Each structure stands twice: as C-alpha cells, then as structure tokens.
Image (cartoon, rainbow, N blue to C red):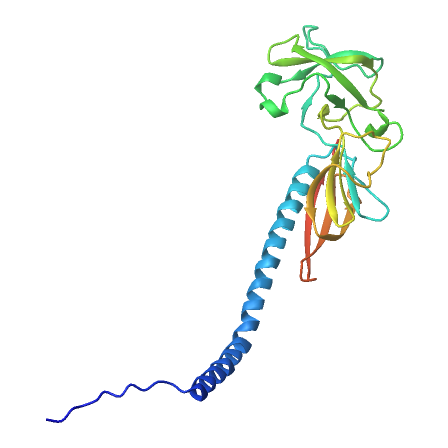
Length: 274
C-alpha cells in the first residue's frame, strides 16, 4: 500500500514582492484616472455651496431694498455699500373734512399734531401695524426741503387711536409738524421705529447688514449682522433716471477655499413714487 503525501506549497518572498509591485502600479494607474473626476466633484460641491449662500444673501438684500422709502437709496463712492430708509407699511391720509364737516385732515398750511388715516390700523398684519415710535414720511423726494434723512418731511408717532369716522384711524404725532409738500395721491409711508435705517456693506471679506444708526452717518465701515463671509468684493449701482421706477443692481464676488471666484448678479426694482 502506497502512502500519499500531501505537499503544501506557499509563496516565496520574490513572488510576494512582485505582487506588491504590480498592485502598486495598478493602483497608481487607477488613481490617475479617478483623481480628476473626484477633484472636479469636490470643487463643484464647494462652488454649489458658495453659490447657494450668495444667492440666499442677495435675495435677502433685494427683499429689504424693495421696502425702501422712495428716493432714499444711497450708494457709497466706492460702490461697496448701499444704504436706504426702510418702510413697514403705508397708507392714505384724509386731505379734507367730509361734506358734514367731520374728519381730521392733515393740514399742510400749519403745524399739525394729528390726522386721520383711511382704513383700520388693527386690520393690518401685526408686523405692519403703526405704533408709537414709528415715523411718518410724506412725499419724500430726496432733495433739499423734502429729504427724510434731514427730517424735512418726517415726524414721530406718539400713538394711534380711533378716527373721527368709522373705518378710519387717528395718527397722533409726538410734536406738531408742518409737512412741506402734499402727495398727489394723499399717501404716506411708515418708517419702523426699531429700524430707521439699513445698509449693506462689504468690508474685509465680510458682508454686513447694519441698522439703527444715525442718519448723519453714511455707510458704516463694519459691524452689524454678518450675512456672508469669503466676500472678495461687492458692486452696487443705483439707476434712478426713471423718476417713478428705480433700479438697484447688486453683484457679489465670493472666493472659495480653492481660490475660485463665484459672481452673482441680481436686480431689484424700486417704486420711487412718493
């Protein structure tokens, strides 16, 4: 009877070295082919995130700018800042008494301490209701004698009451005011007392939103809420050649970690009819 021996063979050191070398060569070839697609994907994700951030910021800015008081938008000389007076609501004031001699009209011939507004203040949404501390602006033209920045045509609200007639609201002013110009459509705007001025400014790679500083200060350099970072530059422009409808142009350049620049451009139309 023959005895069968099982011979167990293994890999030699030379064979293992050859396998490792071949594997390394194949890995290098594969890495060469897949590196660029992976890098491109990472770059596209980074650009998409930055673009999404810039798009959200610029739309937020446009939403605020559309609420600007007519003829109140200002652009800094270096075009890195846009500034305006915001509004929360508006209304129509009573210009004369009714046929029965009732009603409290806004008198433009003398200093007037109150007037009736058509409509009920309580019917407005809560964030648009007129309250003490707000400011009334009438026929703002942004020129000497009718400039809200100088207080020519604005007055602070002391309180809101019941109008002399149904469906009217009485606006009581903190101090009697003679407004310089009447509005053809008998309109007025309301500047919120808790945010009387707003500006967006690019400084040091950051986009800020400033508010509630003095009218005499034009475009603070920094401070306020941070809207975006990695901002290389801004470019704001204001075209008010059309006296009724102005155009604000906003361009924001943002730089990625890889040194790429993303540029977003947006336009916002503003009704400048006071």
